[in-house]
Amino acid sequence: MAATYSGDREAELLHLARRGDERAYGELVAAHRSALHAHCYRMLGSLDDADDALQEALLRAWRGLERFERRSSIGTWLYRIATNCCLQLATRRPRRRLSLDHAPAAAPHTPPGEPLSESVWIQPYPDELLASDATAASAPYEQRETIELAFVATLQHLPPRQRAVLLLRDALEFSAAEVAELLDTSVASVNSALQRARQAVEERVPEPSQQATLHSLGDERSRELVTRYVDAWEAADIDRLVELLTDDIAWTMPPLRTWYHGLDAVRPFLEEHPLTLRWRHLPTRANGQLAVGCYIWDAEQRQFCAAVIDVLTLRGNAVVEVTGFSTPRLFARFGLPERLTD
Image (cartoon, rainbow, N blue to C red):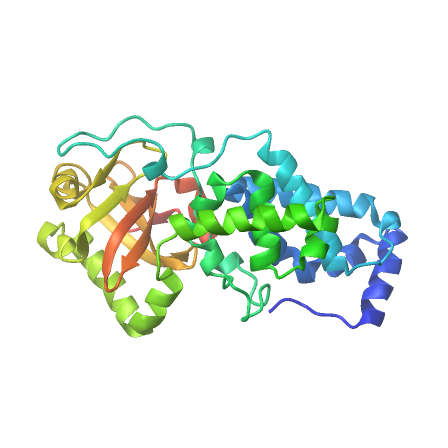
């Protein structure tokens, strides 16, 4: 739970921070840090870029404390700075995407291609980083729904200012007037951008959300599905694995550009490539979805080494998409070890 302060305590911390007390400043912004980081991730689609944007935002806020006039809350002021940092960063970085947006699906028996730069792809977001109270339950988009892969990917298709308007209005529940002030624009412009952004989300984000699907399954059935997924992998049992997948399964592996669609393509890919290796797994959560940390056996080191974070997208009680993020350096951000013994 994020910290909350009375008006008197916030005023005291602000006073001390303005006098150069870094500890007071850290306490002042601590209540907002997690939610700001998630906001930056939604804006940019990247854990790395969210780190950079938040660091820059907090540095700007520290340097600009004397200009904070308390006409709004400290949280609103921080969101203004963080959003503008994200908008500026978005102009300097390529638009992040998922594999499905990059190229057509590969034909059956096509070997995986060469990886592209990591900066091209959306990155997974650890659930542990989500603020517990950043979004009110009455918001049109629940906090975890707005972190789901399909939603974050759709945001990246929007112009950056439309992303900002949608998130500030619908995910964070700022008023149109507040958003207009935050973005230095008019209420009419905010409303127009919001209408276009909502239409894009309705067209691209499938229903029901993963949160609704997981709620319908319940915790026990969700854990059972992950256990069956892990057991099938570790037994190299293609039949048991395929039983968990929909006929129109999509299997993607960023930063590899190659991806496969449908059981006729996914099954031979699994049999001919990853299922020829030895694997171990640890369950985790990413983007408000079920996920698994996957480790490949390294005969030289005689250990299982971090390899892929599989994020599972469900339709009912089956897996309709596996997004296998082949980014071992991110394991630590998920609280996962780099290696497992046999």
